[in-house]
Length: 78
Image (cartoon, rainbow, N blue to C red):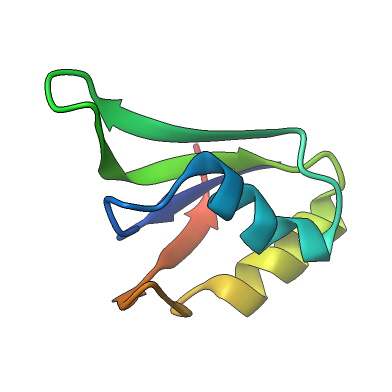
């Protein structure tokens, strides 16, 4: 299941994003969308988890959670 994470701090790293989701299960991939010109995050990214139940638990637990002064939004990516 692919999840989209919105409203991330621009200082969030892929490693931090993986660490946030890994307590809920296996994380296959973790990608931040980057602004190439500024070499900074655009404030959103994607996490892929192979187990749908684990991904749903992560979604429910982390949606609207405060991470680095920002309240993130987690939803299933289309």
